[in-house]
Image (cartoon, rainbow, N blue to C red; front, top):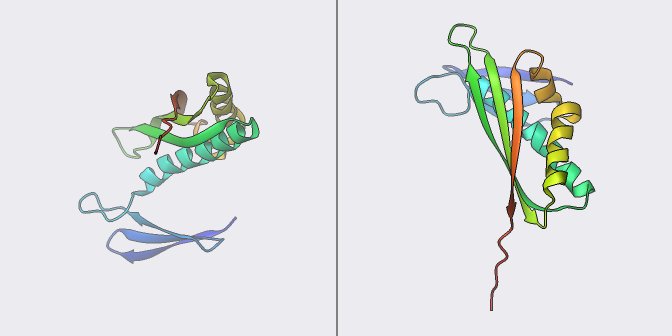
Length: 141
């Protein structure tokens, strides 16, 4: 895997992946125009794990309509301000979703599949939780 990060201006940088996709990083504390590198790390953990959860639920023939992960991260008070803990809370919406299947999907992601959160868990306390929402079926006449 390859990537590059190029200085754009001030504390703004553009990252380009080996597959040609670009993202903007902003290290400015005030008036930032994009997520900071640490915000990107937090979101990467959520995105990686969400891909797993949705994929596992679909393979289990669950009728998933939406999946959102709410992320919270605590950081050290002194430099380097590394993450000390990260919590991922999944809100999965669907039709007749099984709590057991959602719990299984979150656990499999946390313990086996999500490269980002598993990598971070070597030095950060990473925890997971979930809630299941029944889909609201609309009736249009």
